[in-house]
Image (tube, rainbow, N blue to C red; front, side, top):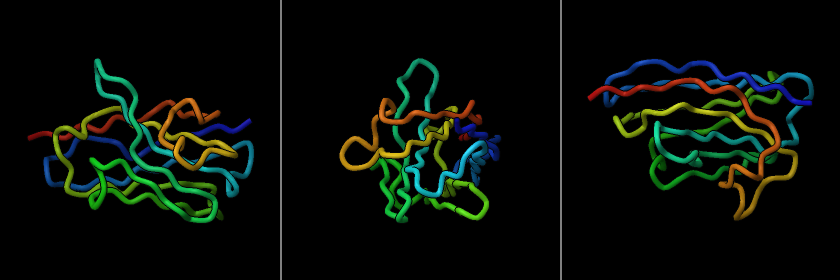
Length: 125
């Protein structure tokens, strides 16, 4: 079993930055695909970014050029650096992990076996 714990959310003004962290425990996730998803009130959970064990990355079009996903395998941790934040980025952000997710289905929540509880990001205008 893999446990995921997000941190780093908060309230920030538009144009500001935040860095989210996702610490994994229970198993080493260096060979796993790790993803970030978000869900705003009344909306479906949507893909934000993912990183493969090799370091390959994928991003939603809405965050390309503003968000960067990275991983530190020594710390069993994945990060999401969010810059130039917009009010529409406001959501509960979730970390996810899976040993095999990648390819065209990497953006689908159903591909991930393990999820954290989420951390709230609120961007004020």
